[in-house]
Image (cartoon, rainbow, N blue to C red):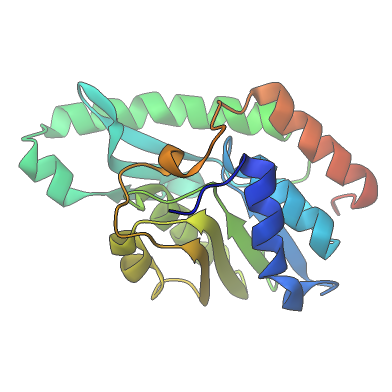
Amino acid sequence: MITYQNRIHAGRLLADKLGKYAGQPELLVLALPRGGVPVAAEIARALHATLDVLVVRKLGAPYNEELAMGAIAANGVCVLNRNVIDNWNISEEAVDEAVERETRELERREKLYRPGRPPLDVKHQTVILVDDGIATGATMRAAIGLLKQMHAQRVVVAVPVASRESYFELRGLAHEFVALATPPDFAAVGQFYENFGQTTDDEVRALLDENALAHPLKA
């Protein structure tokens, strides 16, 4: 079983697989916060690219927040996992409550991570969309949906590890899907990391600020 020391180690290995994108002028590395940011920061550093975040929120099922019944992103994008909702007999009221709650958190994080930054603009750009791993794929589906709405020229999903089910579901939605591993014994993303501690808000902002010094975002 493949195991990464931490997200930085995973990011460096993933960057090696994305070398063909190095130096492209219209290239943006977008991380799903918080865990995807340290991975994406290593990719952006290796490819000499701008780093930014795409805030997407998982909709955790009642009594089991780790189980994704869907995800939301900016511009009203909402992706629901009907299999989870139906199998767990989750009410529409519970879904609506989760959407409302996570929308507030999405707005909070957008203000926290991107203060003073221009609105995210991906039009005509190649976007490398990064997370630290994919389990159900609901969050990544929402992110891809948003980028398509925003007219990204090319969407490349890049992750250290993904469940095989999600890999086969999502690879048809993106222009390219780079996963270092799609193990058959997938249970959770954290099982493939020696250190899978929570990434903090301060770490996210520090990594964004570090990249911005070298690659100022255009207003």
